[in-house]
Image (cartoon, rainbow, N blue to C red; front, side, top):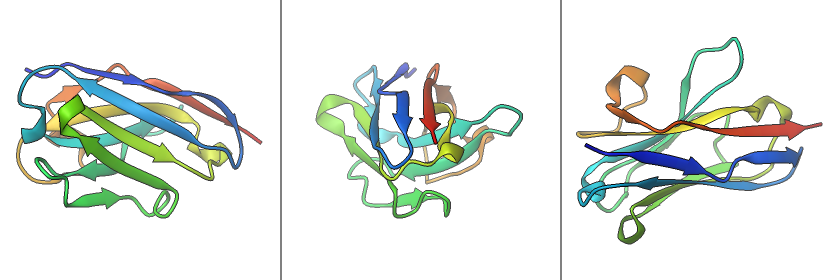
Length: 124
């Protein structure tokens, strides 16, 4: 079992930055693939970034955030981060972190554990 708690969301102007954090419980955090998802009102939840287990040497960023967002992990702190730069109004959404065993995945159904979400609002 893994419990996930996101933090770091808020209101920011377009062009600004935020860093989301997701703190995980348990002693096996490093063995989980971690993903960041977001869901805007009226839209499906989408995977925007994922990072492989252990060293985190493999990452995925969806095209709409590539070059602006960066996923990383700190296994000593049981935490995964999402650094978000050059934010746009279309980045406004509820952001979730999720965990799974196995390889990188981008489908919502592939993840077993979810946090409660943190709201990111980008004003124009």
